[in-house]
Image (cartoon, rainbow, N blue to C red; front, side):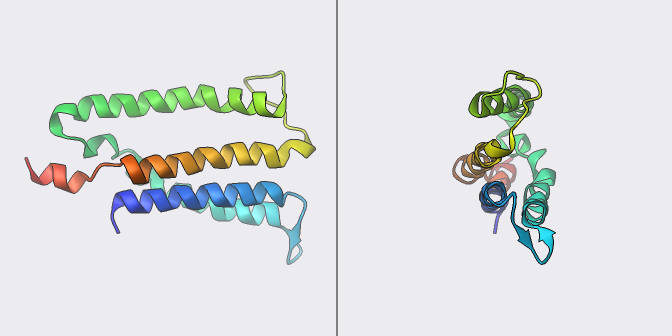
Length: 138
């Protein structure tokens, strides 16, 4: 299994577990909160992709490698703005920098966050490059 497939599966898994955790925010499992158990499982899914995320721009051809890393950092910066603003708009909060989510809106908020994980998994899987092929052609 390559980096592209593994990254896609990790994104899909993190998205699914985040959405499931949002819908089970008040459920207990074995005397423990199912919300925290599911989030703990989801935590390990995106964390496994962190070491390879720095290599995403490096998988490009040599001529576009520098712009690939720059765009990776740029998209990360855009996500720091779009994430909280989108969450505030979806749950109806007036504070766009630190949205306050009422208890009744937790499932909606986690569906929003989970969809970002799912989108990252789709981009990783369908648009990801194969760095071994571009490196071997040098």
